Image 1 (cartoon, rainbow, N blue to C red):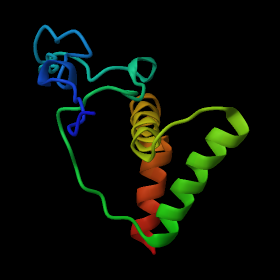
Image 2: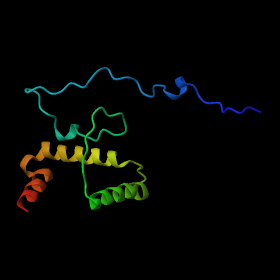
Image 3: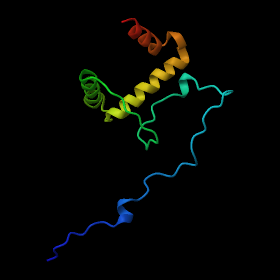
Image 4: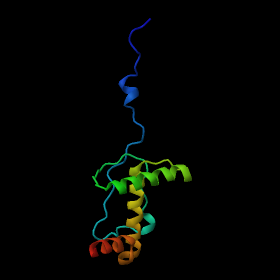
Length: 115
């Protein structure tokens, strides 16, 4: 009887799971448009290169978690909170690109300033 457990080697643990990218994505120059509403979408499930920290209230975190659970229970979509947030950001930015001053983002921020 062996006393040591057989563990996988480093090559099995740290294998590549996706094809490497050709390079960093090109950023639009001053003469290029930022993109239109149709080109924006959440980045989905992939490795992300940048990270931000966002502070939310307990109520906002609870609402986000309830939305995530509702997506799973009612719509069969299993996602994490980060993916929900990325999709929401993409939707807001697409709306801003398409509608400008009439976008939900501008209206919401203006309303918040008025409080």
